[in-house]
Length: 236
View (cartoon, rainbow, N blue to C red):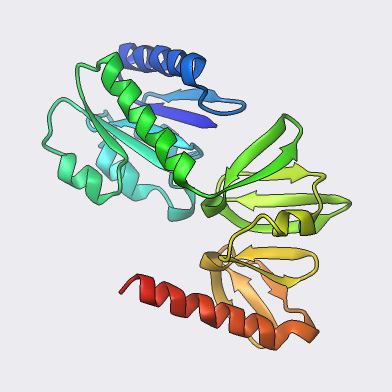
């Protein structure tokens, strides 16, 4: 779990870091938690990898709102907490799907409430449990792009990182929900990340091309069509 703080005031970064560490000690945020501080939004955009992002509205180089709009969708943090001296930008923040909005001066109770909301969202989000080098971990299924079998390991490619496990691909497939499709025995893909679906192959939104099993082409096509119909109904 990576938490990024974007604020040009070192005192704010120090205060948030202390609150986050205290919250982690009391409630447990996640395995291998690390906190990264960025004095400028542009610094974060150079490597926008974070599960939770705290960002100030007013920074020297660009505003927090501009920074959020500049993050490529596939790198967008799962949870965004916007910080400001007023409520002026609350509508813009929530339009960009911010998880929470904090008003300066910051208060420990409010920071804890923001983290509570992030943890509740994570708890309600379907998770894939697997064995990694650090032990048993959980990955939000929504963050997975595809899984592949590779040299007796399974690689889980997410929006932010690639995780390696000795858990067999088929064992993991049994834990996944119906957003996932197995085009052939070495790959499982998340259908929201399919950009194009052809007769004998599909293309993911990261440009990866994966061949379809010859014996299962009709079945796979129907599975993908059913998924598209379901999504259309859910969106009204």
